[in-house]
Image (cartoon, rainbow, N blue to C red):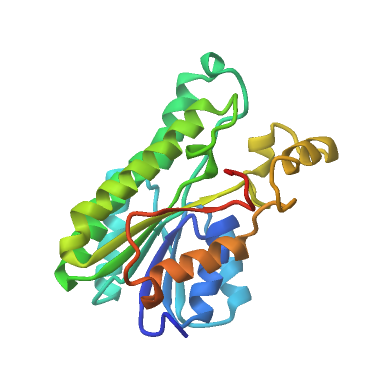
Length: 249
């Protein structure tokens, strides 16, 4: 119960890494808001958890008005915000960088980068009021050891790492810690997009680059997010922690 009495928001919390983080936070005693576009998936997750301390909030994180509305509803429900996890993300399909459409480029940076700008405008003032808080940004090994043909996705996650470190320095005097997690590709809905196709052959090739020989799992990322948001990590801020089975070595 390391998060007992804490409130936490997880964006993209209805599936993949986000769902794993939501589930672990609930088990550790937190009250959690799942922020997502997919109400059906969020409702299914909530039903499977079978507890009262979790609810769904719809928000389009690329839209300032939608994000503001979500935070207004949270303010009416909660008197404090302890934890915010910027997990929502997307990618473009693997291809030469010059072939990625402007539409896909804009989508990647809107979801992976601008969403953090929008959420920060509301979660940071709330945390400053309390003089405490923990923010976790889900980056990627793509920020540290980029793969060819995912250039603009890699760049968006590199932005996330730099933003994390800058946020950590700026917010430390306010008692707010900011860290990033850099997962290797995992068993999530985005896996096929990273690999281009999901076949035994592409999986074998991808896994060959991971010394521990497996993909990351939502449980792996949830355990790391739990540590970084708990009091056990009270002296940790500004890190981009690799959870990658040795991929970046």
